[in-house]
Amino acid sequence: MGRKATKDTWDWVPNVRLGPVELGAEIGQCVAALGFRAEDPAPDAITGWTRYTLPDSSTAIFEENGKVVSVSTADKLIFRNRNVIGLEVARLNDLLQRSDGTQRRVPFESGAFETCHDYDDLGLHVWSRDGIVVSVDCQRHDTDQD
Image 1 (cartoon, rainbow, N blue to C red):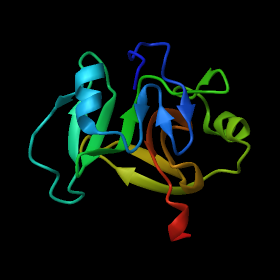
Image 2: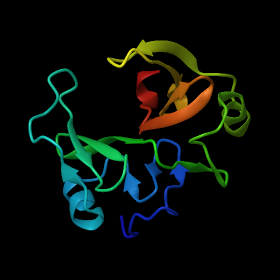
Image 3: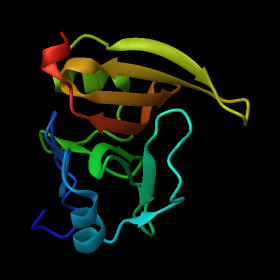
Image 4: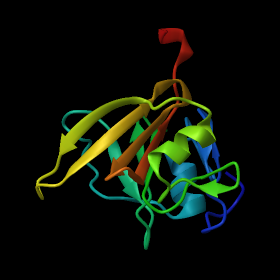
């Protein structure tokens, strides 16, 4: 948590962190050190998570019981010196050294569809449109549940 979030610090360590945001960190640390702000203080009715956003960014963190449980971004996720946002899903699979994750198509209110590719062991959920990565969600995969 010692680094400031900048456009160049959003490297991803699976199941550990995205940039300066560590999964499992105290939410207060992210708010104080990085400037995240609560979007709505009431937790989501389904997940029970509270969403915090980073101003001038499409990056958000989600908190449950005072801890960061997820990081979501459409800005930047650097893995092996590549930004995965904007990559073709096939290139992402090569980068991850995985076959395509479990897929599900999700309709949005706009009428558009996105495909979610779940790489559960990496704690990564990749959203694509027309085969191109448009956003990612990072969480900690709990190996005790396998």
